Figure 1 (cartoon, rainbow, N blue to C red):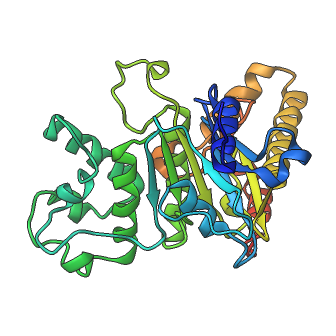
Figure 2: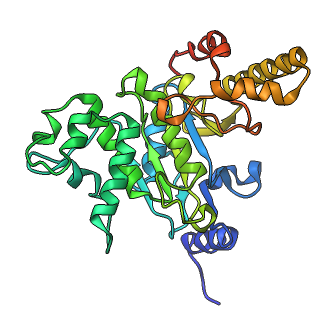
Figure 3: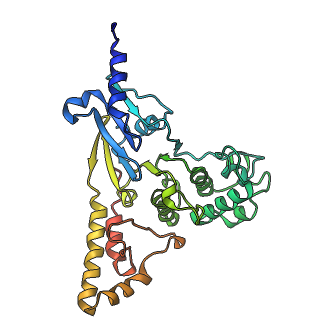
Length: 325
């Protein structure tokens, strides 16, 4: 049988544990094997919008970079590592926007991540629809193929437009996993809800502005893991993990639970007043935000609910908690 090194034993052990883990992202640490049982500090199941929170210098950036394979895990234990199924495409979207220039056009920037044979004009139209929904300046949308419009590294356009191009490029590329560093921190306040709405659609519909004739279930599951610096930035997240001294622990999304409870209460009150569920539903529907208006969309289990004008004062109270987390 021969002698095996510790590295051989670990590899064989991990292969056995995760050979059926095609639909999971795993942050794995052997140190926690005796506590967790399967050696995983956290399991990120695909098909979710996952927020990573934590105080400064606790390891948020290192974790995201490790998930994106742009940085190796640097911990005090040599048996720490990240396991990601190799068939998944993982794209990292840094906090600082990257814009190609000066000669490259808006179209060149948006289509940069696409590979293989594809219909350039069709993909460009899809990309422009995405950028319009994100709130990119109309002047740029009207001149998508104009050279020297953006300037060197985008110095001729606003910081918000540079950031939107940076985010839009990733959505156009449409990988299975997006790893995003504080995606809205450099975006103007009035556009942030629209960015989160697009992130939600990316996960829920397995892509943004995809072919309407293609069944959603025929596409691979999409996942976004992003870092958040405020409570409001976690409102749309399905799951929240806190990084503290390099250790991950899952947290309850208290803000989202509070908002859901408020909306359920508002609907219940309307039902009591009208005495008819259908009337109450009809009263709420015009107030449910539409994605094109750039407002927040919540993917809650009660699909008939959404942020409405009557609840705005209370909702703003919940979102006002913008302290760093």
